[in-house]
Structure formats: structure tokens, C-alpha cells
Image (cartoon, rainbow, N blue to C red; front, side):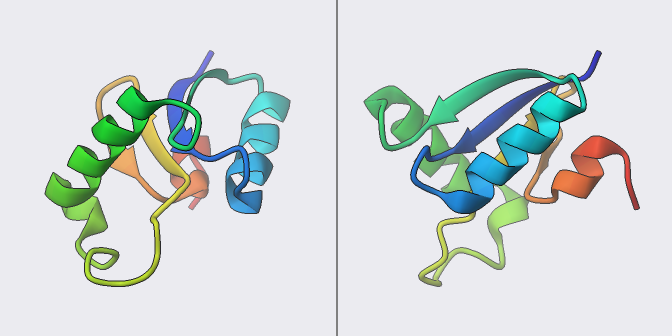
Length: 86
């Protein structure tokens, strides 16, 4: 079974669509809602400021969610990568 941490918001349509897709695939999900939990928001902001995945997002008005963190620590903004699709 695939385990993934999803960082996003319950108000973001892309986050909700990704969660639904992952649940449909049987993934074990740890959802970190950046608008409902101060600690999750702080963790996300640190990730956004330091991860190379966010190089194209920093300095724009894009949030960069949903973000996916795999069991091995791999960070991606690409749901297809999480699902193993090309």
C-alpha cells in the first residue's frame, strides 16, 4: 500500500481532487491542512522556502499545493509521479 503525506487545503479544489484520487487508489494518506493547523502551515512554509521543488513557485502568487511527500521523503507537486504514472 502506498503511503503519502498530502500538504494542502480543504478549500483548494486541486487538493480535494488529489485526495479523492489517492483514496480511490487505496493510498494511506496523512493530510496536512495548512489552513486548519498552525503547525502544518509553519512546516509547509519552511518546505516551500527550502525545497528545490518550489524553485518555480517562489516569488509568484502560486501557493504550490497540493504537495506530496512520499515515504522515502521525496517531495513533488506532481500527482502522477506519486501514482507512478509517467
